[in-house]
Image (cartoon, rainbow, N blue to C red; front, side, top):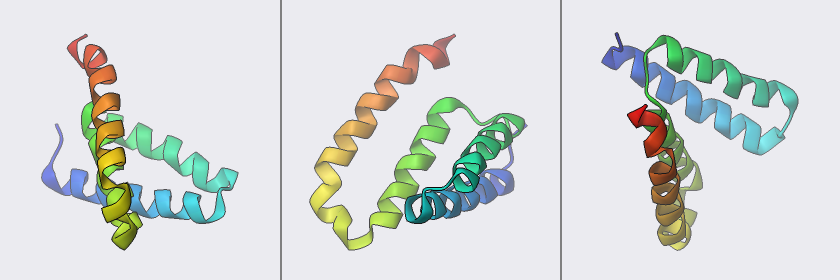
Length: 90
């Protein structure tokens, strides 16, 4: 069963790992994404929660640049969430 603490820790780890990957782009940082996916499964985090976690981390990492990119990123995130909805229904 997922707890608020485990989800909060996962969000923090996800943002840190995404930042590392965007800065370095190496295999180690990319492997962390795989590990976080497994951790999300262990916490019983659903797929759409993970997608939203990614969107939140992306917005935070963009900082001030978020204002310019906001409409496009929100629309792209909504599109992704909709395309994944059938997976959640299964």
